[in-house]
Image (tube, rainbow, N blue to C red; front, side):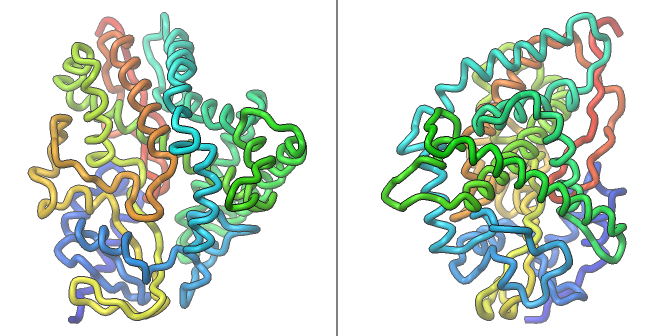
Length: 406
């Protein structure tokens, strides 16, 4: 089957002018579930086809299997396991999960709930007497970065340095050599080097000194799969810090924006605290923090929805489009926290399903549940708010909210 090329639709989605509302363009894209682009890459935009790709063992997450990797795709140093394939991916993920969740550390997330609630409470206390707050800078950013730094054993005084590094790295993810200044890529490369060097220094201090933080546990673990190398530990910590932080910031911010746009749901959440659990799942479908997986590559020619994708071709997965596919979800453009059948793509699927998802969910549940109960008649200052540049990890760069007397 010959696919209809849709370069203009994809170009408009990636253009910053569409960041506030890309969903009508996703609907256009879904008219051609598998669309070949002018550069030979393929865009997949429908739920079933995205899900099939994410579970297809013939697909690679390793950039070394791309026929024509673009500038900026090749990472410096040892890649994180999210960018590796089995069996390397499986071994490293198992080693990380021994200290990050079930079955070896099943109480990690629940054991942190008291600390998470306390951290949220301290941030909300600072809102007292303020008529205007920025949900991003005053709340959604400092909360998850403090959590990730605590997990890794990073000193709190070093957190501001991470803000700069993370910003530069995120901005470089969607680098386009045709339209973006080289400085954008260079700053991302330098931030990656600086972050790896810093984490490597912390790791050196942990060898032979077991502790409760993740770096200590990984540095001194001799489990059935052996021990990670220092380079692998740094790559895993780097992944946790960037992916775990940025996705949670966007999830909390997108969530508050959605609630302010749906005041009846906000009021209901104030009265029904348990609603926050299905509400966060609906947010992951309706306004997810991750919109696009920029690439996958095929080990061999594969056929998707009748379209042949050649070996090594770049495949772009439009997760946010799939989660609003009307062939999978009833009334997909409606925000419905009571939605029952909600197997969204918010955290991906398959072997690369976000391993920090349980923590991100609980952070968002606690943050949003507390925030709506403590803000006094909150109102958006601007709608839409200003957005971050990235179409991949999409969320407001600021979300100004006024409270108190109108």
